[in-house]
Amino acid sequence: MTLHMESAIDEQSGGTLINLEHLPFATDSGIGARAAIGLLVLETDQTIEDEFRAIWPRDGVALYAARLHNDVMITPETLMAMKAEIPPAAKLLPFMTDFKVVAFACTSGALVIGEDKVAELIHSVKPGVKVTDPVTAARAAISSMGVKRVALLTPYLKEINERLRNSLIERGLNIPVMGSFNEADDDIVARMTPESIRDAIVKLGSLPDCDGVFVSCTSLRVAKIAEEAEALIGKPVTSSNHALAWHMLRLAGIEDEIPGFGRLFRTPLKG
Image (tube, one colour):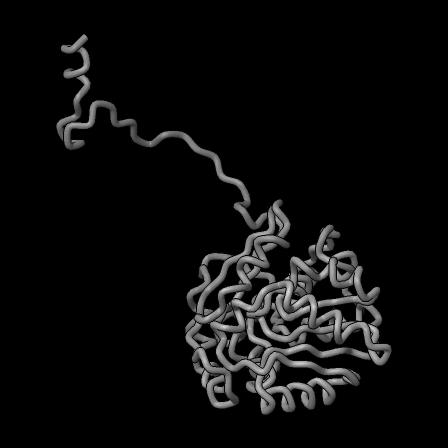
């Protein structure tokens, strides 16, 4: 037996006893057989990938993420600075993949830079792809669910809040109710407990002046409590990540109803 094993040694393979070359194989459509979707994630974001993993369909919908640099402090200046980081981040997405949708995952950044400009920057690297962002996604989600009066919850400081509310109103939203945690540090925002966020949603969403709640900021953990919060207030609830995941899937032609994540994931894209 020993002599037989020694005779099988291929001296050109560094002493490997068995070295089988050119083994047969087959190929398929890969993990994105139904759709491949790209996501540009902020360097400081600690939340969005966890929420997307929870929501994402398990069969044939591939999600590829790339990180882009941003400052941990959220100000109009640091948000605008992300503009230059979008094309380099988009270039990090797999070049051989035929993406149906690419999203920029920053709510306040999309507003400060401008949704059309974000799309233009992504198209400079991925021409022809469908593009979305949390602002575009939230507007689509709110419209598709038939919400007319929105309660807006944010973690931001007053300057960002005023700019955000005014910008959303300019885009056609009616926002009679607003609340904020007033925190500028994105690291702290990412560690706010889902229970704290749920309680704030209930406080705002229970007011008769609104018929739905939008929670702005990709760092806030809302996706896993959206259905619970909806049950408590009897109104639709969505957030930056929650709406973005839904909008990306719908733009990619994925119409799956996904249980456990609230009304939105049982809702088709309107128009």
